[in-house]
Length: 340
Image (cartoon, rainbow, N blue to C red):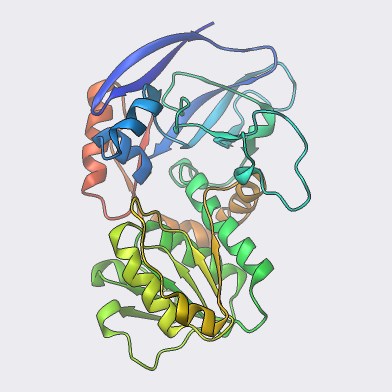
């Protein structure tokens, strides 16, 4: 069976690749709704080092996607069943060590990062890389991968942070900070949840947290037990510096923001306070399952709908360019129906 794969060959230039799909050991899934990630935008716009672009391209973009099972010779899924696809893939098939999470295993690879993502007519994928779902709008299910990243961060926080969690603070007011706040609100309903950002309009969306602050209005005497950094970029220097200043001794700092450049950290104060810093990136199947479990509740669906903008369906390559342009002007998440 011949499949159409819509690859980014050079920044803002797509080409169609034809390939055979594996119907013997893989599940055939038709993508339904997709969501654009900042990583997709960086590749699309060419905002990566030239050597990285040469290393990764050509490839199909998008790793946030839900779809519909078309065919499954393994008998694991039924035709028409809704699924979300896990882009993280173990290449060697070896069992994980008891402490190892699948997304940190050496040798694993990630679709839409040097390997074709989900911008295809069909996706042939291993049955263990699928998570079925029901009673979740497809527009919401499209951001499951993104939501699962927050689920993993909260899971790791719960494992390593000390038991005093009266105040948990998020630095950042973007999409990642928002979904993280959703997960923390569900997992730690008794904690005081605080969000610190720089955009008052974005902060107004966080109506379900206890307190929000603009970063330049944060009181000098503000204290938090633990903190999550969701800023990234050049601004993560200031965010991490503020966290180290305002966090209480022996707190846990969860780092989720991506910076292309190295940043300085006040190690003297960090050591004086005995802080623990934990880096989080991507997620695994267990996090997808947790995400689906949380996302099927009406409360979470309603909150997530507040940050989702649905663009018009994609019927051709011109429409792909359109949704990437739309996403540049969308404050949170852009999703679209895939009809190619």
